[in-house]
Image 1 (cartoon, rainbow, N blue to C red):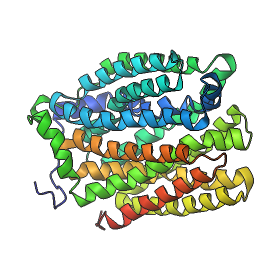
Image 2 (image 1 turned 60 degrees about the horizontal axis):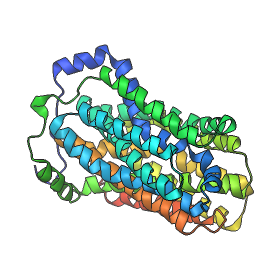
Image 3 (image 1 turned 135 degrees about the vertical axis):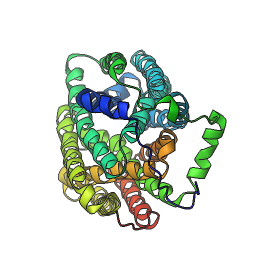
Image 4 (image 1 turned 60 degrees about the vertical axis):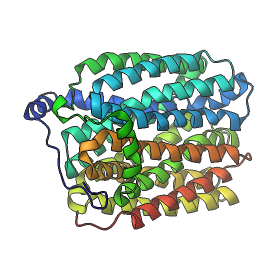
Length: 413
């Protein structure tokens, strides 16, 4: 297939697999949702504990923000391996191996005694967690195509939005009765339960549809994918957006709790407001994508991120509006997730459906790689005010819009 033209072939799932999926749709949806939630729960649950960890580990705020960056490094690079492995050997085995690594990494975090130790174990935790996320997306593409794939992606993201909605609040409650270490032991339990539930999930990639390409050659194909304009546009739009999201995750605990003196519990409430916006736009996206088209919704969503990011940067720099001056534009920025993430992933996967695992891995690596940059910049320029966070989010929002506007050619979708 030429890399200069959008792929038009559609891989049709086997009839037996379609029947099994239909007859067990609810538990399959639940397991896929749990797998996709690993990225969120691994991060959101411990966010309220960052100030407490700063004190316990004798580290400054910038150092502790690298626990997020270390996680993203492992999450980004790990996907590049899991994707081709799953295209060759199926989805279930790599997910199971990833869950084992996640459990080990979470236990290591719980037993860490220095900031450097926890940064390293967070990377191990992330290498395991990313297998669940990247392969859950590939499983969706195994089972669905076109607008239906975008609809299912939105449905899954609506369900998985519960994890970041309750994560900070649950983390705050754990802190009230125990230490920050208990949060990571909780993640050990979550990983173990998900590993048990995996036995109920059917293999979505039959042997007849698996790649016979050597893994070395499959990994080298990433360079070819990046020459495809639409893949690059979708990945860039989602990637820059993730850079803003992770700048938000890295910066808001200190902007809200330290700078504006809100309690960890109220931080969870403020964080939850953005998640409600995410759930609403994912539900809207699943209803509108067939009528309006994923590319149009993607462009509209990225335009909102650019405008709200610039508004946030102005408020964060001048102090205008106080706490509300941060909360409102951040709500708008985060809330349009439903129009950006599902459509950018579904669009990229549609370009090369026969390499769903590898394309999902590449898109995810770019997304979380930009997240590394976003969170690291917030830490690098930390000055005790919300301004660095605001400007990083603004730049990322503008970058997301430019990719969607100029690298994804208009279609009649």
